[in-house]
Image: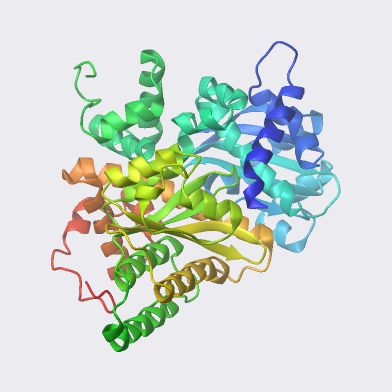
Length: 246
Length: 260
C-alpha cells in the first residue's frame, strides 16, 4: 500500500541501523549490507557516478557483487549502466533470456557466468542529476516482487540522501514525523531544485556542481538546505557575488 | 462556486467539452505531468473554484504536489510539506471526500492548515480522493475564496475529474501491474524535479519568474507535441536554446472549455 509509506521508511532505517556496527550511524555501506535482508536479494552494490559516468563503488555486499560491479565498469554496459540514465528502474528477471543477451551482449553472458541470474538496478537521481546506481542481484532468475520494488525505490532515495547529505540523512533516520515536516527531507522540495537551476546559471556550471555548491554553503553556514534554497529563489541570495547572505 | 441552475445547459456543454478534451489527450505515450496540469486548470475553470492542486503520495508516504493552478501552487506545496494535517491528508488517509464549506469553523480540525489557507485568502476547501481499486494514490484539493463550498452537483463533477486524473496513470503505457504503476508515479515525480530545475535555469537565464518559465516550457511542449520532461531535458543538455522558448510570442490559441 502506498499509504504505508512512512512505516516502510521507518522499517528500512531500522534495517540500516541493524547492519551498522554498534555506536556508528548508518552510512552508504549499510545500504549494501542491509539490502539482502530488506529486499530478499542475494547481494547489492552502490556505484557512484560523476559527470555522467559510473566511477568507483561506494560499497559491495559480497565478493560476487564486487565481480559484477567490476564487470559493469569494464564492459561499460549492463542494467546498472542503463539505469544511470533511466528515470525508471531497470528490472531484469532473467539475465540469460534472449532479450537480456541482446540488450547487453557483453555484460549479460559475463554476469550469468559470474553466477547472477537476475539483476535490478535503481538510478540514484535528483531530477536531472545522477549520483550513482543501486544494483541488486539474485543468483536465481526471477522477478522482484512489488513490495521489494517499492522498498528498493525508497532505499535508493535514502542512498541519495546518504551520498549527498549524510548529516541530514542521519537525522532523518532518527526523525519522527514532525521533524520530517520541518523540511529535512529536501528531495521533494521544489525550491531546492529551482535554486539549483538558478545557481547553475549564476556560476556558469552544471546542475551537479551547482547543487554541490548549494549543499556546501548550507553545511558551512549550518543552515537547512531548504532555507538557503528559499533565499536563492526569493532573490535574497546570489552565488555569483561575494556578499554575505542577509 | 456553485453552478447556478440557469447555467446548466452551458455548463453541460463545457463539461462535455472538458471530458472530450481530456479523453483526446489520453493517447499512447502522452505526457502525464502536462495532462495533470491541464486537468486542474480545467477543473478550476469548470467548477469556478479559485485554486486546485493534485497531490500524489510518494513511496515515503509523503504527498508531493504534481500539478496546480498557477498562483497558489506555492502555498499548496507548503501545505503539503509542512503540515501533517489538512483536508488533503485527511482525504488521503480515509479515502473519503472531505468538504469544509467554511474554514472559520475549521480551526479545531486543522489548526495550522486553517491559518495558512485563510491567510492565503481561501474560505472553503474540498479534497477528493484519487482512488485506484483499494488504494488512494493521492488527492485533488480545491480551494474557494468565498464560503459555501461545492454544490452536490459540482462535487460529483470534481470526483469524476479526480477519477480521470487517476485513469491517466493507468492509461499511461497500459499499466497492468502494481509495480508498473509505482514506476509510473516515480517517473512522474522524477520528471517533476527536472522541470523544477529547468524552471530555475530559465528564470535566471531569461530574467523571468518561475511561473513564466513554466508557461514557456509548457507552450513549447504543446506547440511541438513534445513531453514537458523531454523539453526540460533538451534545455539542460543545450540542444534547445532558451531563446527558442521565447520565440513563440503570440498568445496561446484560444482554449476550449476554460470558460475563463
